[in-house]
Image (cartoon, rainbow, N blue to C red; front, side, top):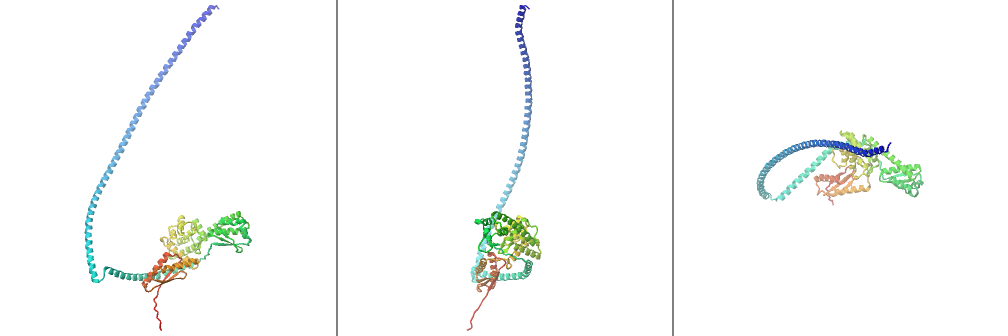
Length: 516
């Protein structure tokens, strides 16, 4: 190929190539501009559509807001109208009340004015009456020859003597009549109840004695350096007294239940022969369980003996604890059973509920089972226990009233108190220390000697009777009746005693002359 052709081709290529490149660029720019123009148009359309939609939403929101505002306004106006109407009603009522009060005030003022006039009239009448009375009194003093004070004293003395004599006679007649009517029946009921209730009592003390097989056992009980005896005393709360008494150990404690636990545990240890702290702890635990069983069985046996059923298990347990409780040497559980039986017999005689009377009699001293653990009197503790275990109000009142702390609300409460007194007053049922006995006799004589006109007094029959010698010149026959009554009331209020005390007032006049 000729070189000219090649050059021509190359030259043509060099000229055409830039032109083609530039034309391609121009074409691509036109295509991009067409696309951009189309996109801008679409964007403007979207924006216009969005503006239209926003405008529509805005109008709808404004309409809703206007509707809500109108609704709230209408509601507020309605409430305002109602409140305004209510205020108007209140205002009308207040105005009406004010008018009524004004009328009442006017009426009261008129009444006060009338009363003031009447009071003035009464004052005038009173003054006139006083003047008239003074004139009449002067005339009477002139006629009688006595002053008003002398006449008053004479009248009072005369009336006092007449009333005193009549009162004494009336008291004596009423007492005689009451004794005639009630004494025979009461004695019959009481004697019958006592005869049908035969109960034995075991006197409890504060010590228990455990017999030993030999004196060598004392050393084993004490243990090395006293470890065994200290362990036993610590676990039981009982003092062990090991002295020169042959083949015996004394257990001392005020709590009889603890003392019984210690006794059973010590007897088991003696039989077993192995005495050391671990074995002592084991035996004390076993003894405690045995005593718990014994307490429950004693409570069940007492309830069965008294014929009382349906008691709460805890009350049964408290009854069993009373087996180890004494009062004036009288076993508390035996006493409660005795009271229950006597109360049942008395109830059957007079026609009241025997079952309820027995229940109240059995539970009347239930507070004594825990009175050394809980503060308060055994009466209040017993009432709390009966309320806790849902006893009937009649039983609760009988427990509360058997010592006179509350008023009797039923005949059963009276029966329980009478049965309690009968059981306590039975000869030999209770024992007292010599000091307590002598103090009570002295207090009895001191009370009677404090009365005016009493010469001497003597407490006899173990304090069951007080004989009072009076001065004949100071105490008349009529005064004797009143003096005996006053003495009995004072003794009842100041002394505590089982049973009853007879007050015997004696008036004696003696004239002594000697024949020479």
